[in-house]
Length: 177
Image (cartoon, one colour):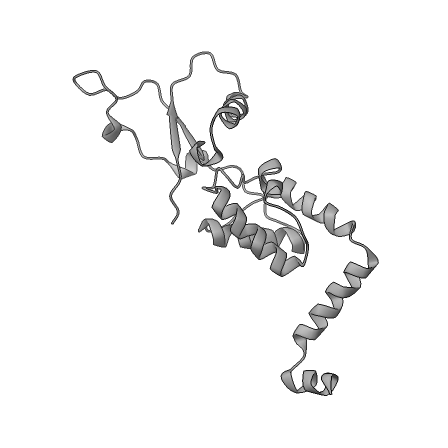
């Protein structure tokens, strides 16, 4: 549905690593679905006349401000994974530096990604892989490493399965009989 949680904050004397520090802290204390996917820094929180937070006055997220530099996926594997992420996250494109969770991902969408990748790549891995390597570059590298560690039997089975998928019904009938 393209919805994600945005965190608004006012920082005083924050270092360049504030996102990482905050992400680690929140991950230790909150379930992943409660950790904001995007952050917006404010000079001060908007307050109502009675001194409470005025949620309606919070600025809308400017996606272009939050976007990372786009680096296109190069390998076929990177392109496959990027296409699946883009489809599941309902975003136009996914680059190598993009973070699954900052694009609006959460545990349920991560599960969808894993299911689709298992179907396409015929490889076994779990949802934890997205949580430990949330950028496309790191996630793709982890999946590529697992693929190269496949046994020759697994590789042969995967190639045979792909060959069978390309056969027509008539050709399959001939093979079976």
